[in-house]
Image: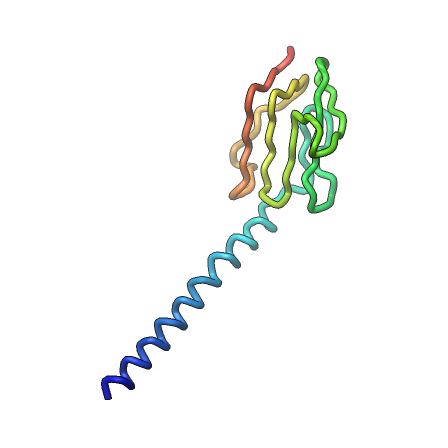
Length: 118
């Protein structure tokens, strides 16, 4: 009798672990798909390529962006897989103050040493 109860308890516990293990992955995937913007401009340049691959850009002293490869030196990176825009030593000539209400849930903006020109 004890063995039968123990066996059922283990079965129920295993089922609960399987359900709990699957749910967070599904939620994160759904949020990433919903939260990804269709357009994203840095300065006057659209940095989303429409593919699932990250895009990399360099900036010159006037704030102009030029697309570059991942292994090259880059100043601007957009990764659609994580919905993250990274600015690293970027020189940006034009910009807008973002409305925080328009940011997608789970989106992230990181900046390191950004130069804003007048």
